[in-house]
Length: 291
Ligand SMILES: Nc1nc2c(ncn2[C@@H]2O[C@H](COP(=O)(O)OP(=O)(O)OP(=O)(O)O)[C@@H](O)[C@H]2O)c(=O)[nH]1
Ligand SMILES: [Mg+2]
Image (cartoon, rainbow, N blue to C red; front, top):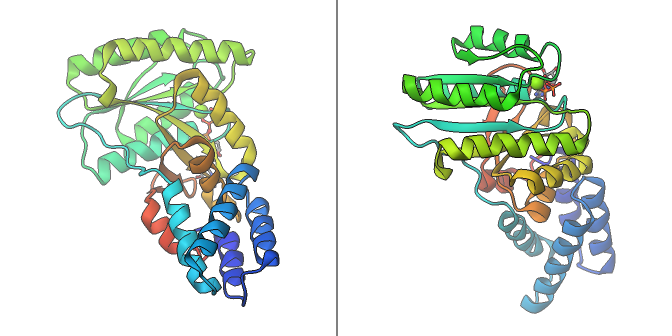
């Protein structure tokens, strides 16, 4: 699944010996592929040590060790909903990464694949003109209820209303959209922390997940964004969008290696069915096939 990066790694591991050059080439490939310096150095160093310790001589055998190390970087990704109660997914991320589209995709996935009935949207991006209309359009198509107020309204109030009405109606999944931009970063962080408090006061920890949406195309920048959001509200899960638009994809390893936050889904297009659950085991299995 690392696409061209995966194919390049595959090519490298098909070569002959395990000398200094091999490790240097591997390092270059990983850094070029968005894995990031920290995770790259750790991966290459642990591979080198283990190859030495185990007396491995072929690149083929080294590849198995490399795959195991990659697997150990990736926390298990599922985003399980608790049955018979209200679950809340708060969708966060900077502007344009695909939050609103991802909300539509999640609603479709939970409706169609998991058979969940009683989904509601909270249109808590009250900042951007057009955001409410956009989520309304998806809600119409998906037959999902939307809780909204006027543009410029307090996002915390929208979410509070949504929580109250969802509980009263016995709904099972609340998907809350948020603004990716405020007048400045301090405002954004404060706003998110306020929303987080409102939700925490209403629902238990097991049924509340903070989901960060990251654009795979932005590579290492995405990682910096993730750190800011994680520091602000502690992210539970990441959805990586625009996976169809990158040939690199090493960002998945960087997210695991640097943040240790599980990835739950990959966005692979603009349609509401373009969302795939992320499974670390099959990711590693397919790593070198370039798919
Ligand atoms: N190719 C591709 N495009 C995507 C994907 N996810 C979202 N998009 C597109 O990215 C653009 C932005 O998506 P939005 O859902 O509006 O992003 P947002 O984060 O809500 O943006 P703001 O509300 O402005 O903060 C749209 O044109 C989407 O169709 C994906 O997985 N693949
Ligand atoms: Mg949006």
